[in-house]
Image (cartoon, rainbow, N blue to C red; front, side, top):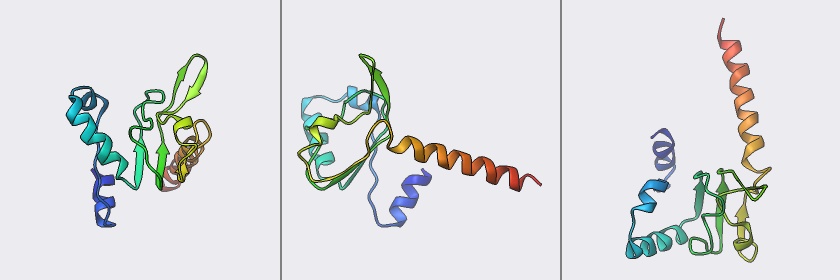
Length: 119
């Protein structure tokens, strides 16, 4: 809720869906969801389902933040199907090597701040 509140304060609309909710949708609802995601400027995926987000969800000009990570056939993959992004204009965080290092840096920063505030 904090992230949603922050984004809305910045004038951004926030919408989220879980993998469970996604699995319960019928074909019409899925088609509506694909179109809604395609119209988005920023997409953050953290499902942990290899290459789930594919060309059905994607359009030019998007900023794609791929937080999900999983292994398939010995390869480390993100939620977003990388080959479906190659012909699109926009920005894409790779997996591995995209969001992960930032996560580690923020975690270490918070550990240091926690230690300094312990006094």
